[in-house]
Amino acid sequence: MPGDDGAGSESVSVHELVVRSADAALSLQGDDGAFPAGENYAYGDPETPVRNTARWTIVLCGAYQLTDDDRFRDAGERAVDYLLGDDVRPHGYTFHCRKTTDKDHCNGLVGQATPIRALTVADEVLGRSDALDAAREVFALHPFDADLGLWERIEIDGRNLSFDRTLNHQIIFAARCARLASHDDRAAERIAAFLDALDSNMALHSDGLIKHYVHPPVRTVVSKCIRNPEYYPLVWNAVVNPLYARSEDRRRKELGYQPVNLAALARLHAEVGDHPFWSSDKLDAAIDCLEAETERLLAGDGLTHGSTMPGTDIAFVLNEFRGTPLAESKRLLEHDLDRLLDPSTYLLESSSIDPNDQAPFIVKFLDFPDTRLSIPTHG
Image (cartoon, rainbow, N blue to C red; front, side, top):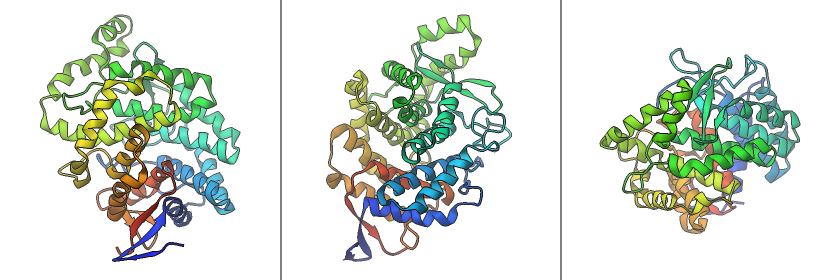
C-alpha cells in the first residue's frame, strides 16, 4: 500500500499508478467500446475517438498483464472491437482520425501509428489475431520508398497524399509500428530501411537541435522527381530548411519537439536495438542537446508545440540511450505528475489541452520499471 510522505504527497509505484488510472478510465468507455475523442492540442483540430481509444487499449492491456483482472481484459476487448468496426475505417482503407474540412482525415502518418501499435499489442496480450491482421493491412497500405527511407500518407478513401514531410511524424510511425516487426517481415524490412536512411534524413542545428522537416539528399530527391511528380513536395523541404534555420519561432517549435523525436527514437530502439544508427554522432548530439535544455523544457518557457509530458519523455530517453537509472531521473516523472495528475481520479489532466487527450498518455508509464514515485494528494 502507498505510504504517506506528508506535505501533500504519497508514494506510489509506477505499476500502481497505471492500474489506478486504468481503473478510473473504465467509467469513460462508451457502450460501443470507444473512449472520448479530443482535439489536437496545438492546432485545435477535432478528432474521432480512434487515437484515444488506441492509447487506452494499450493501457488496458498493460493493466491486465499487471493484475490479471478480467475487467481490464473485457474493456480491452471492447476497445479492440471498436477499432475493428466498419465506421472506424469507413472506406476500408486507413483509420478516420480527424474531422476537418481543410486537412486530411487520416491525420497523416501519426494518426495511423497508434492504432497499428494498439492492435499489435491486442494480439500479443488478448490473443486477437483479427487485430494483428488489421494492423498488418493498414501498415501495408502506406507506400514506402526504400531509397529515401520515407513513408507516404494514405487518405481514408485510399487516395495517396504523397510523403509526410515532417520528421517527427516519420519517426513516430516507425516507432509505433516497430512492435509489428516481430510479426511481419515487410514491417521489419521497412523499419530497417527507415533506420538506414535516418542519418541522412535527420538534420541538426549546430547545438544538436533536430530540424522539423525531413532532409533527404537533394540529389536523390531530384532523381526521383524526374521520374515521378509525387516527389516534388520533398524539394520544398530542401528550400525551406535553410530559411527556417534562421527563425527563432521555428527553433522554439523544434525545441518543443526534441523530446517527442527522441522519445520516439527511444521506443524504436527498445523494439529494434541492433542497428548502426544507434551509435551515430547525430543521435549523441541530439541527446546532449536534450539534456542541456531539460530545465527549459520542464519550465515550458514559451513553448507551444511538442511534448505535453517533457519530463517523462526525457527520463525515457536517458534510461534507454544513456542507461540512466530511473532512481536518478524519477524527479522528471514527478514533475509531470505534479502538474497533471488529478489525485482524486488518478487521471492525467491539463489546462492547456483537451482532458480526453491528456488522460490516456498514462500509457507512457508502461515504458518504465516499477519504481516508487512521489505524487500529489491535493489538486
